Image (cartoon, rainbow, N blue to C red; front, side, top):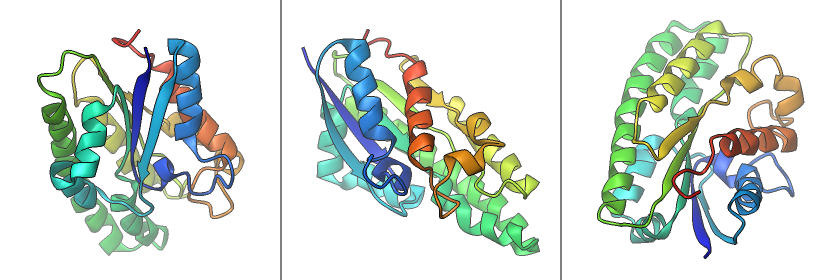
Length: 212
């Protein structure tokens, strides 16, 4: 028996900065195949620059996205970083507008992501076949600005409170904190190959119950 894996989200899902490795999603797929001892068919719906307010209507109305979610046994979602990044950049310049803007952006993002998760469960409702949803948390690409880290951790904590027993969050913040030089690409924003492998490993550590 094979499984279907749909990867949804922003440039982390797309694999920006990974060059030929493809990011965390193909690595996670390989790990899933080894653990589940069967084939895992894979579809990557990552979009560079995607924000939660753009992903929400895709999940609600885009039939291609909805079909991919409907047939998936494994779903990963990376979203939220692009919602907060413009304000985080403003904070690097010690802008007061950045401080007030990021708090508002965080609240908007929470509302969107809550609805995204709800909609995924609604798409899957009525199915007897088990499935898992795995959210990818965010890290702080601006470690010199403490406030950015505070908001990143708040968002990750929020993610952990969503979903049911088949829903878990890969909190990648602790792994990146203090290791940015080793795990980030030359642009200082996206992970490099080592960073993406670490994300895949964090997802893998969450297990695959109730699939196995």
